[in-house]
Length: 160
Image (cartoon, rainbow, N blue to C red):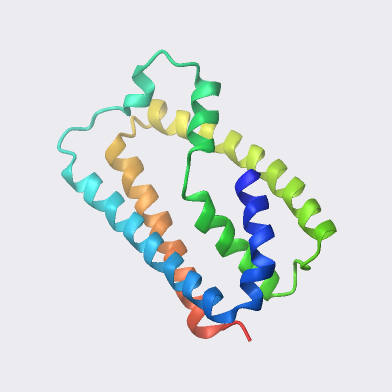
């Protein structure tokens, strides 16, 4: 929620400076492409189907999840992408009340999404015997699809 609120605070200024807005849009495409390619390269380099290291430690899972979520820098381009789409499509007004309501709603949705991710990831790893390689492939696909979505938005629905 903190990353989202910072993204929303900066969006008003960024939207007023269209060249910066466009530059950040292209930077988001490049970042997600790089992350997607890196996930595929990592998956390809993995020879054995080992379980994730995170599953083999004694750290409290809740605290580990909070730390990993708080330190995840991918949230910044993610929230930039979605807030810019919502502002551009006029679904999110650029004012404090709309930003506060959106932040609370996104926080609630994020908690629900993380719960699904936690239980779905647990199911994938334990029931399907999914490995780091499989999970990296899935993340690579998600990053590439996100990059293509942003590229489409920049090319075919430019901010006017």
